[in-house]
Amino acid sequence: MSTRPESETLLVVAECPVAPGFGGVVALTSVATGALVFFAPCCGVAWTTLPRADRIDEINSIDDIAPGGVSVLNRAELAALAPGLAVVREESLADWILDIPGLVGRGA
View 1 (spheres, rainbow, N blue to C red):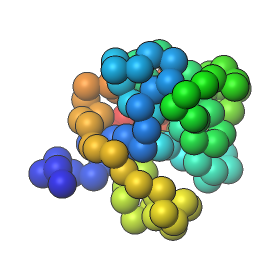
View 2 (view 1 turned 90 degrees about the vertical axis):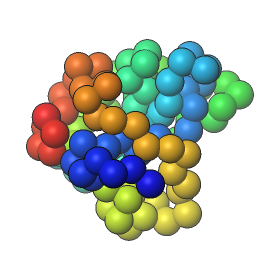
View 3 (view 1 turned 180 degrees about the vertical axis):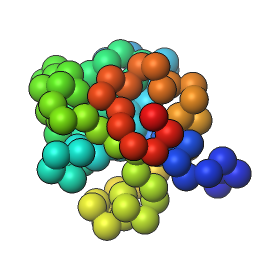
View 4 (view 1 turned 45 degrees about the vertical axis):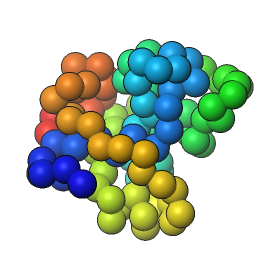
């Protein structure tokens, strides 16, 4: 568990299938709908569902999925939206903030 404030932490829920070994897929929420958005800041690809590690079925940008922007969520919010979805690790928002287009709210 991180010692950073939750607003400065990204929840990584998978490894990026586009750039394996380079970065993770983080869970965010759509500002407009509150729906989960899965995003890999390392390559700029976004998904509406958790991507599979062994293949790439779709390529979207955050603008495609959440044109109103996205926000960081904490563990409690993630658990409410996706019970059972495991957090692989936490990463500092500061490390990826410039790579997350449309980020609003906490930490932005």
